Image (cartoon, rainbow, N blue to C red):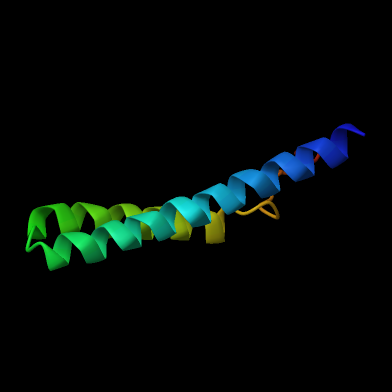
Length: 72
């Protein structure tokens, strides 16, 4: 049961990151239209950060587990 809830929550976070990144792309377009180039650069950075975070840290992200050292 815990694993199902955990996976659903992680999927929700992943989707939220995508949507947040998409909203930054809309903000970027609006800032370019208004000729607010500094705001546009911050919005573009936020959009890329959110989208790349969702892609690379999605719910199938596995932490690295190092094997135990061999005993001699």
